[in-house]
Amino acid sequence: MLSSKGRFYTTSGAYLLELDIEKRTWTACENPAGVPLYLSYTEGRDGTIYAGSYETCHLVAFDPATRRAADLGMMDPVEMYLSRLATDDKGWVYCGIGVARYNLVAFNPRTGERRQLVSEQERKTGTCAVSSGADGKAYGSIDGQEYVLYEGAKTLLSEGQSAPPECTGAVGWGSILNRLPDGRQVGKYSLDGKWFEISDTKTGKTRRVSIDYQSAGPNVRFIFAGPGGKVWGASGHPPWSFTFDPKTRKAEILGTARSWQAADWVGDRVYSAEYSGGWLSIFDARRPWTGEGKEAADNPRVLAEYAPDINQPYAALVHPDGVHVLMSGWPGYGYIGGGLAIYNLKTGESQLIKHTELVRDQSTYQLAVLPNGDVVAGTNISGGHGTRPVAKEGMLYILDWKTKTVSYRTVPVPGAEGVDGLVVARDGLVYAISTPPVLFVFDPKTREIVHRRELGEYGNIAYNGLRAGPDGLLYAVMTKALLRITPGTFAVQMLAEPPGPSRAGTAVVGGRLYFVIGTHLWSFALPHK
Image (cartoon, rainbow, N blue to C red):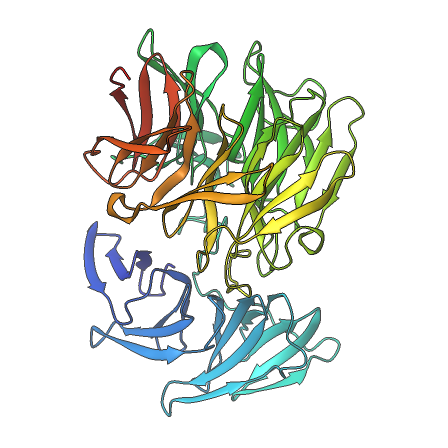
C-alpha cells in the first residue's frame, strides 16, 4: 500500500515493512502478531496503517508518527483470510473476511470493541467486500447486497447513496497503482521480463523502460521425467514451465501459463493439471510454446476446467487405455472435499466425480492404476484454501474402472491425515507414504495392508516425492533423505542426505535421481543395486 505520506507498506513473511520511496530505504520492520503474512492494507483517516493477516485473521496497526506497531487481535476465530479493509471518519475499521464462511467485522481501535455485522445464519462460502468512501463512510457488500458502514453498524444502501471511493493507496492481488504524480501512467508491465511501459497522456506516446533486480527466483513446485529423456518441471508464483536435458546439461524455459501442479505424458504430449481453476491442458513437445489458450492452434491448449470441485490439482494420470486422462486435487477456496475428473481424449467429454461419491469431505491426492485397469487413490483430509479439515484421517480407495464407482475404501494408516505418495510397483502391490510419514504396502488382491514402517527419521515426503525408476525400484525424496525401496522385500535404503530440505521431486533419468531444494534442481548419482 502507498500511504498519503508517500511511504510504501508490504509484507515479508511475518514482518510488516515500510519503505521510504524517495530515499530507497526500509524504515520499519515490525512483527506485532507473528502471523504468516499480511493480505490487506488500508490507511485510517488519522494516518494509522492497518493490515489484515492470512491464516489467523489478525488485525494489526502501525502508527507512522510514534513508530509503534500493535496487534489488535483476531477478527474471526476460525476463518483464515482477512482480505479486505476499510475505515470511516469515526475511527472504526471494517474487515472483509473469508473464505469458508464469510464474515464482516467492525472494530474500534480506541475501545477494543469488536462487532460482527453478519449473522451466523447468513454466513456461507465467499468473502465480504469493504471499501472506504470519500464521504467519510465505508461501504460493504454481503452476498451481492450493498451496505453503508458507519460508526460500527451497517445499514442498507439506498439508491444513489454511494460515494466515490476514497483513494487509500491499497494495492490488492493482481492490481496496480499506475498513475504517477505528473499524470503519466504505467500500462503493461512484466516483473519476470524486467520491464514496464509508461504512457504520457499529454503526448500520447508510450515507451518501454527496463528495470533490473536480483532474486533467487521462484521455488520449483515439482518435477517429473518426461518426453525426450528430459527432466520437466514448473515453478510457482510466478509459474514457469521448464525442461532440463541431462545429456547437454542445459535448461530451457518453455514459457509461463497457469501454474502446473502435476503432469503426466504419453509420447510427445504432456498433460498438465493447473492452478487455479482446475485446468487440464495439453502441450505438444514437438511444437514451440505459443502461450496457453483454448484455440486449436494454442500450445499449450486448455482441454477442460473443473473448479470448484478441483481448483488446485495434486495428481494427473494418463490411463493405460490411452484414451483417458485423470486429474484430482483440492477444491476451490472455502470448499471441503475435492473431486476426481476423467477426460476422454477422443470425444472431449469429461466425467467429474464429486467427493461425496469418493470419500466425503476429503480430497484425492494420489492416483495410480492397478494391473486390472482399476484406479487406486489416496486421499488427504485437507480442503480448499481457507478451510479446516472435517475428516480425521486419510483413506485409500479403489475406483472400479468399468463402473467408475468406488469398490473399496480403507484407512491405511490410522491417524494419518493423508496419503502423499503412491505407486503400483512391479510386484502388483501398492506402495505409499502417508503424512506423518509411514511407508505402507497394500495388496489389492487380498485388500490387506501387508506392511507398515515408520519413516519419521527421514523427515516428511516431498511433493510428488515417490516414483518408480526404470530399474523397477522405488525412489522417495524426503525432506531429510533420499531413499530407495525394494519391492518384494520392502527394504528401505537411505542413499544420501540432501544438502538442504527437499520439498519437491521426483525424476529418475540417466541413472540419476533428481530432486528440488528451493529454487534449485539437484541430482544424485544412483549406486548399483
